[in-house]
View: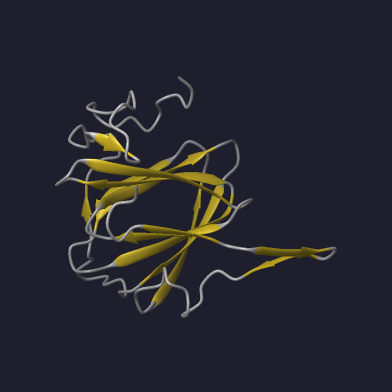
Length: 166
């Protein structure tokens, strides 16, 4: 159960003895709803959290993790629903994140993650379209996580380091 506008598109790997090829973005895909004007590359070390931020002037992000593994979280402060998406270079996918949601990611695993992300608005160095909260901000309290209200992390401040086991 994705928040409105959030989408995940699996990407296909075409492998042979030389390696593999993957299409990252095509204009004819149903998940692509915006004109892309900038592409960015982010390398992040293990256990680092890059969160929380949102965009108030219409920016949409398209995340593709090409190496390592990240946990992407997208939070709607109005409904208090949170989407948690694991994205990895081994099983590539594109994740569309409407910028009006609080969002960020954490690198999971023991290797750096490489994230390529596409945006529909140019970064304005003089007046960036970003509002930020600390990664451990206690106002991010999901009532529902991935469509479930019985997740033990519900109704508590979001903890990026909550153990992945029950």
